[in-house]
Image 1: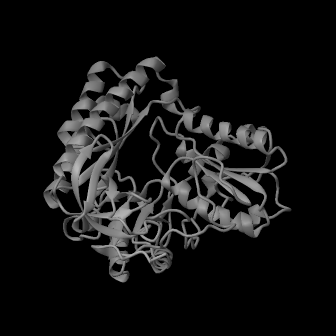
Image 2: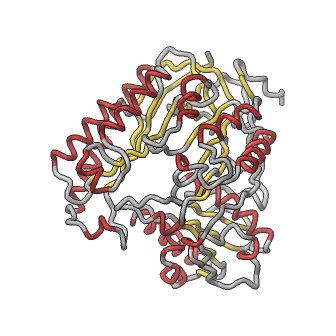
Image 3: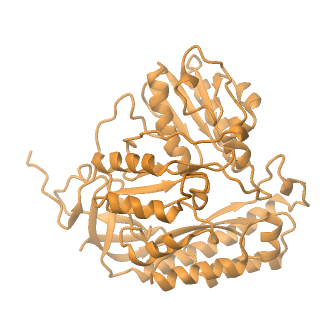
Length: 451
């Protein structure tokens, strides 16, 4: 067999696809084959933590087990995790199930009662080696609100993934009326700059071209650290100390907490990707006040306007909630209008989900079918906005991170289906950066070939 020829317009090689061993089980989705299976639900931070916990569990001897990292953002997220646990027990009734994550932290007893669950580990303890020891308590769930620091964990590999995640922050000091996450994650704590740089350097050395800074509320980074550094200062230091890092992304940002150093990077640093994901939640001021958000509609518009002025062509994602308690059709219409006025492109839409113990759960509720109907309309508006953005990129040269055999994302986070020339080995290109030119747009993204 002839050797695969090199890719034309290969800007940077990636870590490449490789055979997975006992410590490399893929995360999320279904039950994976292997000595330790990991099921991770929810956010990017959970993905990062699942990778760290997998290593801890294996070192402690949990090779024949299922590790479930739960999410508490919505009732549906909890339902999916419970369903996965029941399925795992049904398929392999003798295999112990280890449960952790936000939902397990908030309600450990209910998760411990599920069939097959051998241990429940709280969020304050799940990254401590002793919590995974065979002699540890079957339910070490301590008071997360007493947590005062976030320990750094050196994760050097995200098996099967083309981009890597770096945790910079944990917890949240805000109290949005719909959100239960502060009770699962505890107060805001920042990872020291030096530890973040060490983590990032190890991942770049491993071959990762793109890193994502992640946390619960990353724009709250730094006030608990000496010198009170900001997220922008952290990003600037990373990029300065790691000139070989090709692409840096940020997870969800609060529109009124973007610091001036970060604005300067948005304006002038090409390695900071031209895509911002904004935690907006709504587009009507009455709803934002009832949600106890820190920004107004005008703040959201000003944030998008400033970013676009500094970085023409920048893309925006946003989290939005449809059917919040007391939401009228007029309130909802204002949110629909915000999608157009702010120039949002990629929407992450949630139908409102009551979370026990939150103030919003005590407000007058909308019927569930109405919440779902409004969420559908909002998603349709988002799909139309995304399609328009895809079409605006046609014919332009794009740099694409290849994530699967023929799939990837551009710098603006547009999904791309890649038409590779015959003779190329797509596995060898896993995680590589390719120069491509989109020639068609679909509802799902772009079609592109080598430029």
